[in-house]
Structure formats: C-alpha cells, structure tokens
Image 1 (tube, rainbow, N blue to C red):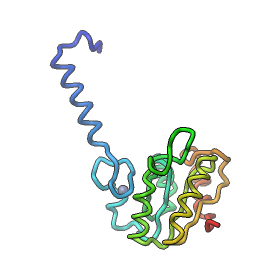
Image 2 (image 1 turned 90 degrees about the vertical axis):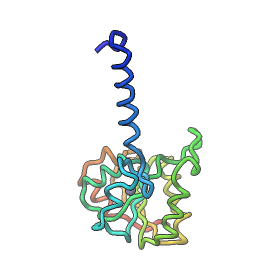
Image 3 (image 1 turned 120 degrees about the horizontal axis):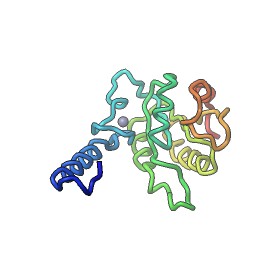
Length: 169
Ligand SMILES: [Zn+2]
C-alpha cells in the first residue's frame, strides 16, 4: 500500500487506528508491567502470592520469568537500570513507587532479579539498600553470563537462578 496514493480519509482512519492501538497498551499502575488494563493480569490474579515481590528491570524480564513457572508472587518493573552515563537515575525509574509499595504491602521477601551488568549491579545494590529496612531482600543467583540478559536465559537457567537466590549483604 503506497500511502501517498491513498485517499486522505483512508490515511486518517489508519492513523486513528494506530493511535487507538497505542493507547490501549499502557503500564499497570500497580507493578508497571505492560498492560492493556489499568491493572495487569498478574496483579489481578488472586492466586498469586502476595508475600513475594520480584523486582525486574523490564517487562520482557517478567515474560521470561513467567515462562519458568517457578515464581508465583508479584512483580515490580523498574523501567530500566540506573545508568548515569545515559542520564538514568532512580528518578527516571519506578524506584519511589517500589519503596512505597514495599513499605505499605510489607511482602515477606523482595527478590531482585536484575541482570548482572555494571548498571544492573548498581541498581541491585541501590534498590536493595532502600528496601532492607522493610523486608528480607534477596537477589537471584547468576549462573547467567555477566551482562547476560534475563530474557535470553533459557528457562532452566532462569529457574535455577531463582531457586539459588541468596540474601543481599
Ligand atoms: Zn501489574
């Protein structure tokens, strides 16, 4: 379809359809995972365990962890990792909302599942220190290659990393 050759009304309709599609995908107001609804499916699921909260950098990590079927708790998506060189500090992420959520909901355990890159490490340590006054904070064990993204890890590796988590120093 050559867009220049199409009638204006048709192009407008197409543009409108794209805008509508984009509007429908937003972020869950509870966990910041991608969601077409104000609160995502995972947060709405009454069978999920409220005592464990898994913190990830990205929505893709939620999808990767869900594939393992190992984790039955809830998630919190940071929206990235702390990276001063890219101008990303805690204010650009959902860190504040996370601290508020943990202080109010008091999960028994917060699991930090962030890739072990330099930025990921910084983020894990920073967020961990903020959350420690409220609850037990663990991090997943990385048999993953350094800099390896969660989303590229196979399900078995990821399930093991989750299982072998240890308390943050
Ligand atoms: Zn959610």
